[in-house]
Amino acid sequence: MSWTVAEEQAGERIDKFVTDAIGNPSISRSQVQEWIRAGHITVASGNVKPNARVAAGDEIVVVFPEPESLEALPEDIPLEIVFEDADIIVINKPRGMVVHPAYGHSSGTVVNALLHHCKDLSGINGVMRPGIVHRIDKDTSGLLMAAKNDLAHASLAAQLKEHSVNRRYLALVYGNVPHDRGTIDAPIGRDKYDRKMFAVTDKNSKRSVTHFDVIERFGDYTLVGLRLETGRTHQIRVHMKYIGHPLVGDPMYGGRSGRTLGMDGQALHAGELGFVHPRTGERHDFEAALPEDMEHALHMLRNR
Image 1 (cartoon, helix red, strand yellow):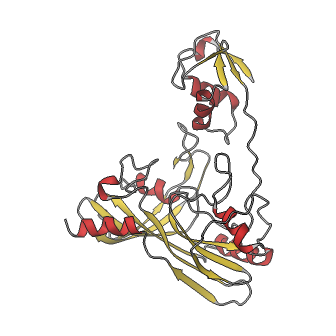
Image 2 (cartoon, rainbow, N blue to C red; image 1 turned 135 degrees about the vertical axis):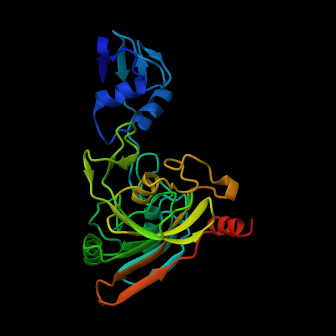
Image 3 (cartoon, rainbow, N blue to C red; image 1 turned 30 degrees about the horizontal axis):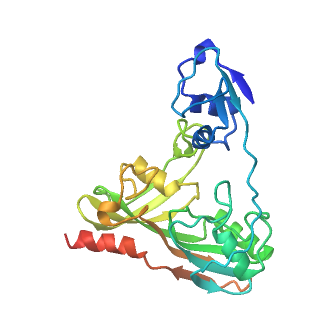
């Protein structure tokens, strides 16, 4: 693809110019920056940096890289299995592990591990996300359920839609949350400045509801429990930033490193998961202990 910069576009950063020109929501500004660094985007046949400014008359050329193969293959990756039967498997996902293959993460994911372990997963979500009923972020640890057949998948998906699945998270956030409990009811959509991020916005957004309760206060930090009523991408992270209490160690929405507390990543853990078994009708509730670094951070705050 190629474009010629118009007078009114002169002075824009090239990464923004190209992102807007492509106009595909699935291609983020961060992705465009990667292409620029790799030499796939040029001005007058010359390489540029992502922060370069375009000038009127510049010819911008994009030569798209060959797409990565996104075939999900079984990989012998250890899993911490909390529950498993013929219909469902529940795991305790470590922080840093991606749930399913996507651009830039074609291996080492939960799906790759499940394909090796289970051999049988539901096909409702296609070949790239077999068995995956819901997701948690790469940098969130905790409980995740997957379906081994389509009957189980349909039942669990319906329970999620009806908000009858119990999903409770624990998060360590910055600041002293003043209310003992509360509800954040604020719509979430794509951030207009960075398509890879999300924000509270009235434009092209969906209703998003998070309930929280304070578990422990440390003056300049607070440990909170959170229950999701809706399940938007990055919902907890966006909502906590919105009320002025971003997650400790959140690289996108926190703005500060959590390393002073020994955290190597965001302090968010999916600690409880509960649902009705699709075949037996019995209620199942599971808990997963906090990861070591998050427990260590709390120990530091309690003993300082």
